[in-house]
Amino acid sequence: MQVDALAGRARWAVAAMFLANGYVMGAWAPQIPLLLPRHRITEGTLGLLILVLGIGAVGAMLFSGRLIARFGSRRMLSLFSLALIPALPAVVYSPSIPTLALFMAVFGAMAGCMDVSMNAQAVEVERRLHRAIMSSSHGFWSLGGFIGGLSGSWIIKHSSSETQSLITAGVTAALVFGAMPFLLPSTPVARTAETPARQHLLPRDAGLWLLGFMAFFSMVPEGAVLDWAAIYLQKELGSDVFRSGLAFAFFAGAMAVMRFAGDHVRNRFGAVRTLRVSGFLGAAGLMGGALAPTDWFAVASFALAGLGVANMVPIMFSAAGNHPRVPSAAAISTVTMVGYCGILVAPASIGYVAEHFGFRPTYAALSLLLVVVALLAVRAADADQLRRDAPAPQAA
Image (tube, rainbow, N blue to C red; front, top):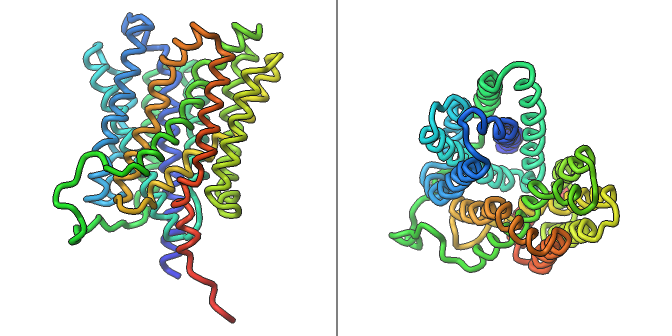
């Protein structure tokens, strides 16, 4: 009974950590265009700086799995979340381009390592509760991003970017310090006779890498809607600024709502069936956006795509955390690293393809990626290990 109480409190502590991480990333978004006049740089230079942030995040994910396996997810999540608190002010107060690049790399690394750590902690809580919490945890991340972006924009408009960064650090600190005492104690992975003396930096398990590329295929469409949907609506559907901005807003809103409902759906129907239906639903939404006769039809289609995409990555993180033959932390860090490459490479590659072939064929092609994930849904069956490991009900 005490174990359930500990896991129950840890479930909300994990939610607070997801909320904090999402809040920081949401608060970062309105700061991005302000770097142009502050440092007198071009959009191209800014793009390279953002790439540095992404490389910092993905690169750090390579090593975070080993640290979590050695020291436990609770300790590493606490450490990385504390390190994230001053990251945004450090970027905003950077006096020069080299300093800015350095702090953006650190910002990305700490956010990425915290991401892996909180997903690893969520998997541990799922095992103790014998039910899914991953989708709603990612829902809290989406909620944090919404709050951080909205409040951050308002504070910058009525005060300054420096004030906004300090307030962001304060709110993040409150969430982190409030959650840390209630995280689930985790036991570092002990070395056994079956454990190889020399562990490779990247796991050599084809099934795990397939999960990673399924996560990649699921996150590329998310990046495509985030970065290019507004331009697509304006250039090819004649949309005004307001309606074009609704494309990602409706996509993100639908994704957040479905993530909060996703655990109930997954607990009832299982991870494989949920992933399969989600993939086909997301593909239908992207194809609808590609074939849309009007901008409002496209907005509605992207909202449908958001409903489908919402639970795909959380299911694959759960599957990675329960993957056999590979330590949970190493598996999650690998799948997270490969998956987030989808958002990192999507903007440049999709822009290049759309420039030569148009946005309609591009979104149609991206819908096929989600069909591939749906057809490979059985590969995420390890996410249902939670249901198989649940204790049998006792007879009256």
